[in-house]
Every structure is written in C-alpha cells, then in structure tokens.
Length: 215
Ligand code: C5P
Image (cartoon, rainbow, N blue to C red):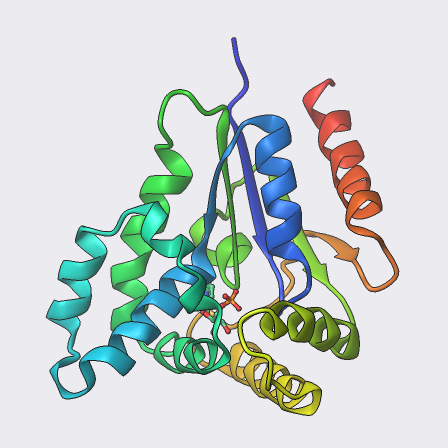
C-alpha cells in the first residue's frame, strides 16, 4: 500500500522553511500549504476593508479561498506581515483558518502523495501526529539578510535595519502570544539553516525522511 506522507514544519520568520517546504513538496509530490500566507491574506483584508473588516467577512473570504490566491506577490510586503502577526493573535481568526488548514493537511487532492504545511503552530496544533515534524530556524541576522534580499525585489527603498527590527518584533509577538505560540515541540527535529546552503539543508531533511520511508 502507498504510504501517505505528512510533513509539519514550524519556524520563525524568514528561516528558510518555505524554500525547504517547496523542495520537499516537489521531490515527494506533496500538496504544499504556506499557512503564513493565509494570515497575510487576512492581514491584507484588514488593511483593505478597514472598518468593514469583521469575522463574517473573514469567514466568507476563507470559505472561497483558493491556494492560488495565496501566491500574490503583494502578500510578501512587510506591512502585511506585521498586520498578519497582529490578527494571528485572535482566537476567532485562528479558528476560521484552522478548518482550511486541516482540509489541506488531511484531504489533499488524490494526485498527491500527501501534504506539507509550514507555519507557527503546525507541529503543535494543526498536524500533531504528522509522520515528520521539523523546527527550522536560523540566527536573526541571517534571517533578516535573507528577507531583506527578498523584499528588495519588490521595494528598492527598503532598509536592512527596518527589516531586522520588524523580524525581531514579529519573533517576540509569535513566541510570546497566549494562543498557539511558536515553539519547538519535543518530537520535532531541529534544523538550523544559518550555515547551510538551500541544497545542503534539503539533502539533510531528505536523508531523515528517506530513512523512515524506506524502513
Ligand atoms: O510565515 P509568515 O512570515 O508568512 O507568517 C506571517 C505571520 O502569520 C507570522 O508572523 C505569524 O504571526 C502568523 N502565523 C501564525 N500561524 C501560522 C503561520 C503564520 O500565527 N501557522
């Protein structure tokens, strides 16, 4: 019988989790969901709809949400990331997002061999029983450099120190919030990407996965 592969990844901002998740998804033919993009999408709704923003609007938008809607470049912007980490503290918003994530995690389209989700509460809440659980991190300066390079392509005036400050602020908010805070669960494998290339990091993860899959 074909094995269904489920991979859960948590990480602080800009640690390289998304890059690795995409490579893993491609290699093992898994549905990939970048859950941070859902919070960014809602953060963007808050900016766009201002006073009209409420739970029923979010519910309706998430109900009609398509994974492709999450690929818009606009969602990468730093002000949207900041807004995302603010609305992500709201219990009701997390409840609305929960259902969408569970559907992707446990019911991916049949042409996939499983699913891979990355975010802040995937290993601790959304996919507690995933076959593979990783906590991907890197030191804050390295993360800020990576995010700075990425943001520079959409905003030439962006300053490195602003990016660093914003990442530190988001770390504080994500690690210390009351609901679903970011943490490494005991059963997650720690991957520190600070001194690893994308390729060597992927090979490290692949080795861990293949060992279990071919047992
Ligand atoms: O991963 P990304 O940086 O795009 O996430 C944006 C924000 O969304 C995070 O800073 C975090 O506050 C929130 N988030 C979350 N739970 C997730 C994914 C993201 O609270 N599973």
